[in-house]
Image 1 (spheres, one colour):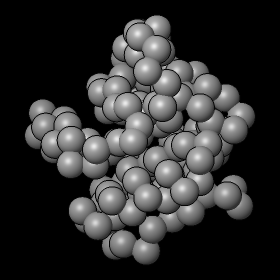
Image 2 (tube, rainbow, N blue to C red):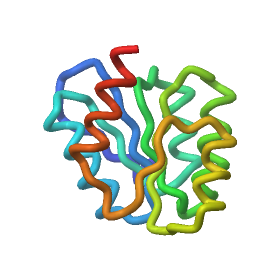
Image 3 (cartoon, one colour):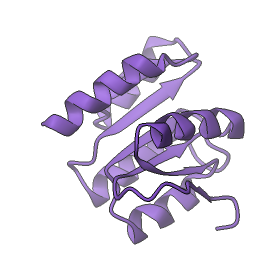
Image 4 (cartoon, one colour):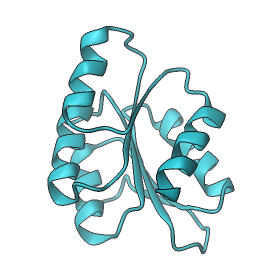
Length: 130
């Protein structure tokens, strides 16, 4: 688990960010940390799964592309563990079939890159109120 980075925040609300682009993962995890969440970020789906089994996650943001699996596969596997887990997906691919595939695995929201953090924040706030 050497590539997993934990935030220093002391909150008890955990958000996992998984993206093949480490800079994108760091920036989005930083956004959630500034909002008071504890964050994990990783570039690999298998590491994300280890975290999902070892921690109670509040929310996951996963990119379509990870270094070791597709974001769709990770989202599906996360939903098998916890069908109620809110999963958001990000992608630089504007192809409608990518978004349709994400919807089929039960994601809450599909955001095109570059991601609008305020919009994602609004979606997260709404999801966590429900």
